[in-house]
Length: 417
Image 1 (cartoon, rainbow, N blue to C red):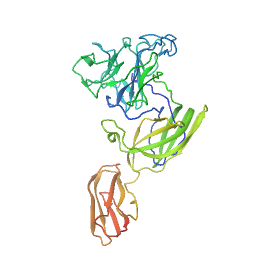
Image 2 (image 1 turned 90 degrees about the vertical axis):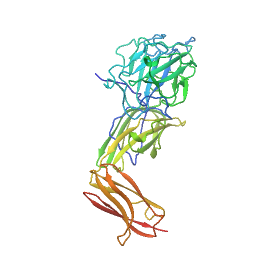
Image 3 (image 1 turned 180 degrees about the vertical axis):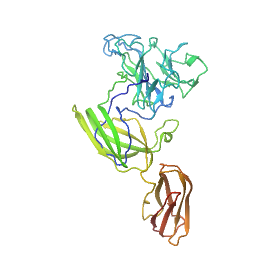
Image 4 (image 1 turned 180 degrees about the horizontal axis):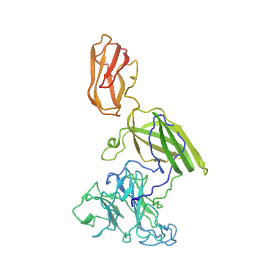
């Protein structure tokens, strides 16, 4: 049986999108920033609680909620998926400063037995007494983190690992992952946590480490999204979502990025996102809110989207990224040049429903070719951007003509000097 991690149910509310499409159902908003460089397929060690017992009792943390504060029973390590894709962690393992794994995730490598959804979490706790163990939690039985310094290692199925250091510990395990493993990135210093508090990335997945109240898979965020879906209607999309509650929610910024997963650099730095629109939130309400938004038509190709939820104090959180491919309802589309008239360059795009050889050129009104813009095979359902450069052209009107195997189409554009 496939084991899916549980994700944090965090945020969303009303907004209006002008260029948004996806078909998905989301149950979360999670905070992110510049993603940590030490990651395995986008998965990072996100939070560690190594001393749940505060001697004063003020900050005791009962991870499994059984009414007892236990060491090492309530100690845990949380993993977070910063990527926009589901990651199979079957056969991955957690190690401490010892010669054997503290925990190995269920399933053979590549079996998809244990996975982490985009923006999702899993937590490995030493002991979980109540039954059944909730989704996203795994009981180790051998996780025991020292209070005076420890290194924690996450090892993947290809014998690579990332490492974090607690309490300034130096690397004392000469054989992480059983030996012969390759470290990804540098060892991250998680610093020193107070008794009863965890050390964790804030926002999640970022390089900023804080010591604060533990948040294993549950949410401290002020907005809870209970349903979010998008339905295609021709070239437009209707978005529907519901929030269970909102606290100090200023609103949402809808962001868009053209291109698929390949648009994300290998080092996981955030690429450039365009802001589509801003929609005000409901401030503070305990009542469920349901919203519907219909988008404008989208160009064919792959699109990625996310939401940036902002509180009144400026605190913000990003949703996980959603990627979809938008189809072309006709045989081809040559968009209108912009700007028109133009003075330096005019931009436009071309897409075809079926892959074919396409020749695209600009002609003057006498039918003479003045610029060859494209003469090659164009993939199906892939919108390609072009520009007509005015550098070597005199003022006048020009015809942009695309000739494919199944179509011929044209647009006019005027150059003003």
